[in-house]
Length: 479
Ligand code: FAD
Ligand code: AMP
Image 1 (spheres, rainbow, N blue to C red):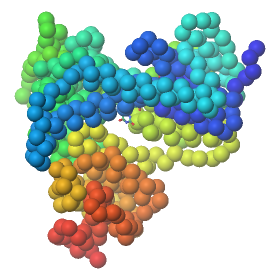
Image 2 (cartoon, rainbow, N blue to C red; image 1 turned 90 degrees about the vertical axis):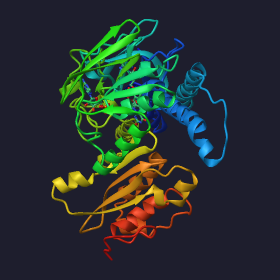
Image 3 (spheres, rainbow, N blue to C red; image 1 turned 45 degrees about the vertical axis):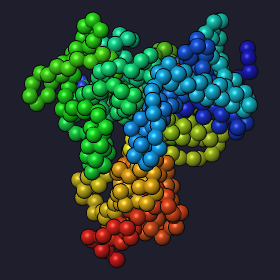
Image 4 (cartoon, protein in one colour; image 1 turned 60 degrees about the vertical axis):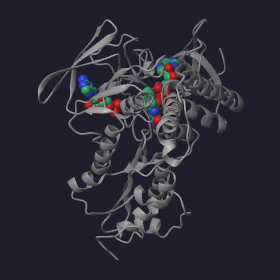
């Protein structure tokens, strides 16, 4: 029998591969099993995030943003570009090259750190044994001191809109269109629906987004969500709220959509339809019937705040467990678990998970919203600063949106930061650091920021909490 492992990780998405690398760094004998097959038919590590999620979507978002900029906005600043066109096959091929580089990088990191990367399926048996079924070869049973389940998530489907892989696709299919659909439907105005809808809208599709909720981005700050809705609609996304899709039927070359809104049944016809109604934890084939673990509500593996399952030595991390389905949340959980196995006592701070929607302008936030705090009766002060008053944003011809900071009225501790604007995904990191160190709005206000930068909007919003932002007239002066 082969020598037992200290740690076997099942799943090499961001949660699993980072757990495996950290465990190996800490001197633990580690294997990581993943069953994904890439576009070229070869096994790949990196999970949803690298292969079909964060990275390919950002490659298309960045490319489509550059295209639109060249086509519509560079002229505004005196840069004349003529004959701009889009080469969709090249766009997709380049996206694939980025993905391949990064998934190859994970394989190289495994090798360099001494992680046994095992392509194939893993299944948890009783007593922390794992059945490893290679893609082509005999299955074998591996012993391990600890097992980390990191099996991720898959797109949800809804009965009215069954996927056909051609006209009706999920997020994975929407990363692979071979040409720009003239008319595109998106079900769901969540993060993925807005990002993928934006990609194809920028490239020329007429996009209609159907969202059953009346509220747009209910998890975001109310003001930011309202401004984002207005801006995205202005960009051409036809976002229809309170519109619940009840039927999607392929009819020849088109998809006939029926939805219900407050006026009754409505119809719209599109050429392609993206179903982006959320994701669900995935654990198919992962757990043998006698392994001792059952999944809870919505299929998530139940864990405590340290990602421990009820079974000694068995942990679960990432999208497969409770909490927001975000790559960085899973990464931190993976690292926490590896370090706890090695005897350290780290924690994940679930109160400072940044959220980002990579539309343009980007939408990002961390912590609590003003409306949540008000509903709970927490007194807070708010400072905000528009990018329209930021020298750097104006110089860059990119001045939509604002930074908003919510701080506890008594202690001035920052409770939430909300950004709609250029590079919001980068700016929000400043807020995460501030909140991680329990900073007050005054602390941020007393910090020096380089000029001219977008970050100054964070500084000004912090000053605005006390009513003395410099580059705007303050209605409330608090000190
Ligand atoms: P996954 O990445 O899903 O990886 C799980 C892996 O485990 C998979 O490779 C799977 O094949 C493998 N596996 C499952 N079961 C077994 C088994 N029994 N044996 C072997 N292998 C198994 N998040 C962000 O934070 N930022 C973004 O910008 C972002 N953009 C996204 C865009 C899109 C279009 C999508 C779909 C998702 C996006 N996400 C984003 C979400 C992000 O991809 C996930 O939160 C993240 O991938 C979860 O990581 P994970 O390691 O838990 O699982
Ligand atoms: P997210 O979970 O952020 O990816 O968002 C998915 C969105 O899809 C949610 O806002 C849901 O309200 C929405 N949704 C789910 N089912 C339907 C449906 N049948 N019609 C329209 N929107 C839907």
